[in-house]
Length: 326
Image 1 (tube, rainbow, N blue to C red):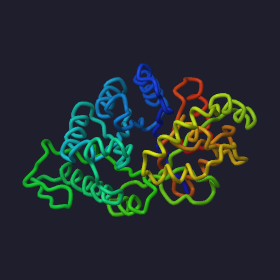
Image 2 (tube, rainbow, N blue to C red):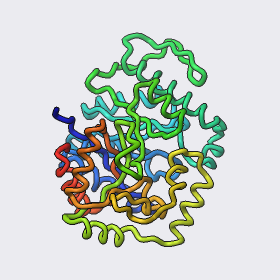
Image 3 (cartoon, rainbow, N blue to C red):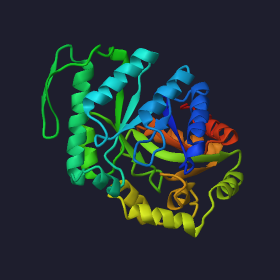
Image 4 (cartoon, rainbow, N blue to C red):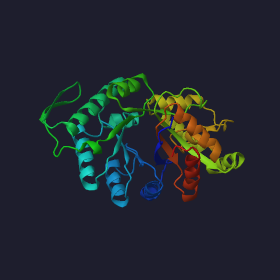
């Protein structure tokens, strides 16, 4: 049986410098465009330096084939607005986009925006958001929608989106509410790379970073030089953990093991606030074999944290190529 090619969406490692943010995103976007990546992940939130829809337009205008994966949080916009952006980008560039549907942002930011919905209800709203967006993008007639959070009366999006440019929806949540909505809406379910690597894979999408070299020892040594441990960075994560109700962040934080494991699993970049996910560290061959094994268990889509450095991105490409799935 021939396994499907992995769709990979790179994301830049956490960037705290607004002066470098756009440049790093564009460097990764251009690299992705010329190296067969599906697109690039664009974050959303009060602390994101450039609104992801604006960044998506900037990237699509500067690339030939990239389809951005845009984070969408209902707290920031109405489903009609999001549908209009999707339609507009399709008309401008003739390309589809992917949508990473999220509910999370800092608790203080939710309060600042006047959003006091409980965690589970935010996922109810997210499910309605997806359902209404899909109707607006596909219906030849005006849409009437009656939900807990959204109501429309004869609302129509013009022009209707061509079927081949319909966005695909992803949901990256680990809670029961997130998994329920992903199943009900048919969104691509995402999960974090599990510590044991071989078990606990129950979603077609996964989020992690890759740090690779020709040999295993070389990769481990280089990774420890790139991502260093220090108490100030750990304190930053502690502060953010006090300001979140994210289930997946709490699951990662509960591990608290910063050691680079024998199987290549490494949580230090997350624990030191340098990345939003675990890393997989190893030789090109080791990582390639693991990716192939993941694909055999149903993995199709990867959100991939990457250091926005040309040499590091080349190392990642070699590991992806070694899988035979990319």
